[in-house]
Each structure stands twice: as C-alpha cells, then as structure tokens.
Image 1 (cartoon, rainbow, N blue to C red):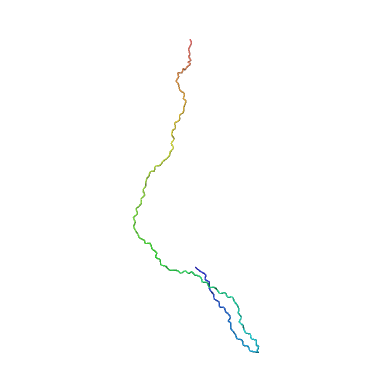
Image 2 (cartoon, rainbow, N blue to C red):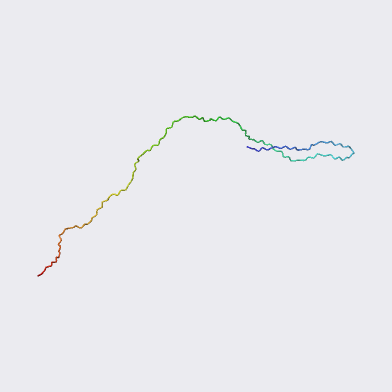
Amino acid sequence: VDVHVPHTQEEIVHVPKIIQQERITQQHVEMMVEVPVPMVQEEIVHVPKIMQQERITQQPVEMMVEVPVPMVQEQIVHVPKILQQERITQQPVEIVVEVPVPMTQEEIVHVPKIIQQPRHHHIEVEQIVEVP
C-alpha cells in the first residue's frame, strides 16, 4: 500500500545580525558621519508542520507449511462380470371393448291368413259337331 508521506524541506534564511557600535563625539567638532543603522525587515517564512503519520509496510515472510501428499497404493479388486439376460414378463392388460348386445323388440305384424278354398273353374269347351 503506497501512503503519501509529506517531506520536510529546510531552507536557510539569512537573518541580519545586529551589531552595536560605539559613537565617539568630540566637542566643538561637528562631523557628519553616515553610520549604517541596521534595518529590521520582516519576512513571512512558511515553516512546514511535521505530522506523525502511521505507515503500513508489507514484509514478505517465508513460511514452511507441511502439506500432506496423497499416497497411491495398488490393489487388485475382483469385479463380477455382468451378463445381460433377456427376460420375458407378462403384464395383464385390461381392455375395454364395447360389444353390441342384441336387443329384443316386439313388433306386431299382421299377416293375412291363407285359407284354402275350392275353386270352380269353368272352362268353355267348343265342340264342333257335324250335322248330316
């Protein structure tokens, strides 16, 4: 994890040094001497504030771990052979069949009665007679 840490920067600031000077004056002699008078100049200097900040660092650690390794062992196993056999099974099946049932229906039928009667047949016979 990268954490931004502020950097401090130092700057050399030259501050004038105040030196006291002695003035010697003699009486009756007037002399103009220019003496440098120290001038105080103010300057605003920004001094960085140092803040403590927690830093997280990662350090790789080598760790020895024992991992169990599966062992391979051979074993002869007898497996029975499966044979396929054809099997016939009977299953009763119920079938619904509609069968026509003969219905008896009565009907009165008038049948004329035949009566035997003697019949007379008249047959005309033509006779040819020879007259002498």
